[in-house]
Image (cartoon, rainbow over all chains, first blue to last red; front, side, top):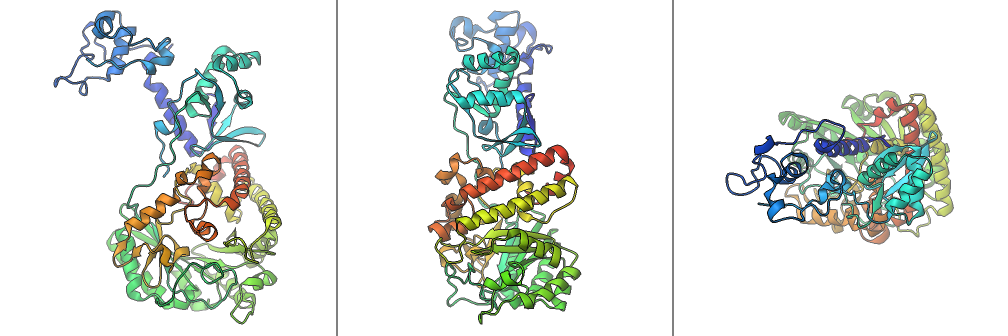
Length: 108
Length: 492
């Protein structure tokens, strides 16, 4: 943290937690280099279903997948739900770097 | 419990509503601004820009745009102001709109492993101190018809219980207590032998301490305590004219002349553990500095801790408001000394500061005010378990027996009542991470309920906690390495 300096152990643990949260979205942060998480460019399978037909075993969390696929990849129709069934899934997210937690979850 | 989770601290980033201050206590030390975050027990030093932001938020009524405009108007860049707001929202120094309520400290797990037992080796005493919580007007003990002295069998069963119920702990502790502990001294030797041998077979270490009024100390006993590394706490009120006011024999004769030579011999001889004094403050016994000088400089105790007498509120030995002011003034004077020592890198013997500093280093956020019925329990001479030594022999608070184990239902009831979350008045108090409502026993004597917050001390506790925060902030800036002396103090 930049404006608060931790002075005891509990404060340092909070600092670590905040840092871990910030690093949790490091892929979205600029000017750090952006690497789409788990994306295999045009053929990432992550947004679909896992081997059992559910979402629990996907290669990465669906929230991340759908965001990276939709916003940051060059191939926007990798998110068919957006195109076909859930046109408003990002309506609560005016500025993705701030509001990405407000994205609706879209399950296949 | 001292558990930190993302949901208890963070996930508050909405900026759509009106800003308001979070749950903090602001203070200054060494010329720098600090925040004590009451939701977590964390201490942060803050930039001057943060202080300016908080001034705006404390004024009330500002939306995100309004707050930004105020900060930019003071010369901050828009990006900096946005970042600062975001950071303070994350840590909940400020809140916005319908922020979810912060979780209270989590309750410790059921069947929390024991760390210490207090063995009341006898409920008999050779003194008749007028304010005694065990024998005085506000006693809650009901010893009628029960054994007066603990037997070897009960003591050994206590050791077995402690070792069996301390899963996962490598070190456990036994405190010998009374009555007057030394009226059953022969039992101590047996317990030490038995407990050391039994602990060794389990790969655990066990340490010992005792509390005594010092009247029955002899050279062989002092040698025994030193050789066996038994920590000693002496209940003593000060120099003769103060000690002899309340700490008297049944005849009314004072005890100072008896204990003084014994204490000098104890402190000169016993070097393996700290020898500490515990002072009970009463009406007219409020000269904290004078008492400290005598016990530390004249008699040579390593540490001295002070506490006002526990009472129901209308006893003639209770300290009135003016007396508490005198006590606080004395505490402040000793706190000044403590700070001067700390800045020179020297230890000062005023326990009341040292204990608080130890907790501030960790940033404790207590679910319960103390370890009673958690890591610590009391054992009466008959083997009855109780939440701590102050509830010994009280039928109202029996919590199992050393032969049959801990009564989990009674323990749960006690802990549910004592949880800080159950104390309404504590929810808006910034000192709750350290206080958590105060002593269960004091609350029972005063209000008839162990789960009642000790409201008669609130202002006092807040002023004292504020003082210790100032000391902490000052030492953190000017001699930070010194704080490490206290980091492991309470084994938190």
